[in-house]
Length: 344
Image 1: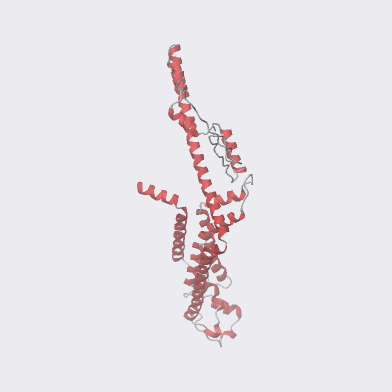
Image 2: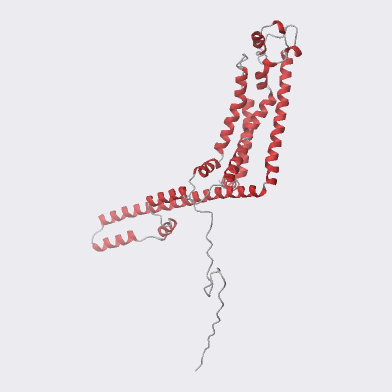
């Protein structure tokens, strides 16, 4: 249990590393999902392209949304975006920084899916099998004699070796190699472009807007830490509130039972004084309540936090010195006080 506790504390203190690990796991999972996926091209004109586009775009969209859902900062971004202004203004640059940080991590798994799909070539083969240049790769003299619908039906069966019957016009192996070569070229180009784009975004962009980048990063971290501390404070208050309520309930029930079984006024007074005398633990729990001891006050506090966040301007109270100077304005002259003791 100690090892799991240490791992959990590490993940809590290193949320960025944790989210990067989750994104890496999702990227590996997307590649494993594609290898386990049973790709079945319909081999029909008009359906091949739709099926391939769906396989190429639908799973990346699902993985992207899943990456956003698994990110804990999505709710924080939505809360910061939709909250009332109150006494704290919203900074669009901070919101953009938060969204871009989440989107960059969530895009890893979809990019891996698209890259693996293009490098494999099955999806591209199914989508563009009807666009193979028969005149250049096959028997060009027979192609003009075939009607266009018949030629499209014949080429649409290229991804399906068990039903393809057009070797007399175009060898299936030639068409497959031709389309897979193009697909792999597009796949490596896609990998190269995404790598260069990631390099530019992560490395080059902060160099040109360093001040704005640091400001957005700082206030993004501030919003995250402020929300965590508020949740921890609310949790601590809820625990103290529940503990005091339960203690009061048990003390009241115990007091009623003692009143029912006690004989004489002295026993009654002793039980009442014991029931109403708070213990040290109860006093400590009441201190944690910070003066908020009823449901209505707590609801007003939560509503006030939502509608009117405290301004980001801390009041700096300067301490008074021994001669009464508070630090503002010119300092008052120091007065020397001498005391003489007489032995008379």
